[in-house]
Amino acid sequence: MNAPELSDPDERVIVEFPATAGYRGVGRLVLGGLSARFELPVDRVEDLLLALESLLNQELAADTATLEAVAAPEGLRARVGPFMRSQVEDAAVTRVLHPLVDDVTEQGGQDGYWVELGVSAERTAGVGG
Amino acid sequence: MTAEPALLQQLEAYRAGDESAREQIVEQYMPLVRKIASRYAGRGEPLEDLVQVGSIGLVLAIERFDVDRGVKFTTYAVPTIVGEIQRHFRDRAWAVHVPRRMKELSLRLARTIESATADLGRAPTIAELAADTGLEDEEVVEALETYNAYSTRSLSQPLGLGDSEDGTVEDLFGAPEPGYDEVEHGALLETGLAALDEREREIVELRFFEGLTQSEIAARVGISQMHVSRLLRRSLATMRGRLEGAATEQGL
Image (cartoon, rainbow over all chains, first blue to last red; front, side, top):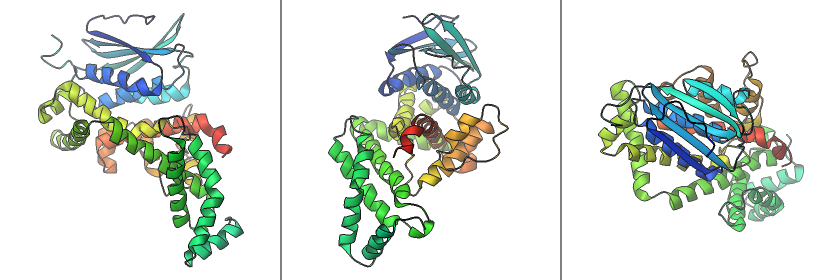
């Protein structure tokens, strides 16, 4: 596991799965499940999952994809990678990602590029405790 | 008129009642069907089954081809054959991999989202959907995924031709919509947009160029939010397929 940790380790979920189309649903289910902890309209959840799927279609620098998602107080953050190339420098990728989530950042590491997607949202009362 | 003269004669004969003329056309174009089917081999379905399904597409193309449209028969037939094969995969995926209960849940969820959106004036949250349907949050997420997975199974297919029966290659790969030259970094998207049918293109434009939410698009276009989500996924996959498979397409 080479994924750099997100800053807030509270309620963190990490999943590693084969980088093949048949396993992308695993990442979607995990991220969708975590998004249920927030007051997010379902269309924003679908947007986030669409952003994840768009990223998972890019070329990875490993045989497995790693998704690290955090239910932070200010919202949901998801880091995915490692990618072979920078995604934020790919205009076609960012053109799709930016309308779908609130922010997109990237961090380069020895093992490749990691993209972090952020969605601001209120926590759902009564969960996560 | 660009249809081949011999084919035109055969079509004319078939439409005058000569069944053997259709058989001749089928026989003539079966290598094309086999070539397309072979691209979908190794995905869990026997090649011969795919050839058979593709041949249904070929027959449909023969039935529906309009010689007055001025396009080659293969231009019309290829997307029809591909559409039949993709539909086969989609139907098989739904029938084989999705438990009946989950199918029912996902369809119920689609209806609930639609009515809740109308009631709330916005898309409901997962928690609200869970409360409305009596499901756990995770079950709602799973049902959403099921609904999407059902229809996007075919999207990772290599051709990226979409599954419109009536579309021609010109329809699918025609000139991009004008007016996007000004959009920063828009060239790649334009290429991808050309692979979409009219409705898919409209939805992609509304979401990624005009910034409407999925629910707003649903209201404007007159379909459900879940359907918008499904079409967006399909469209992006088709666009990717178009970009990645352009060279392959030209070889067909």
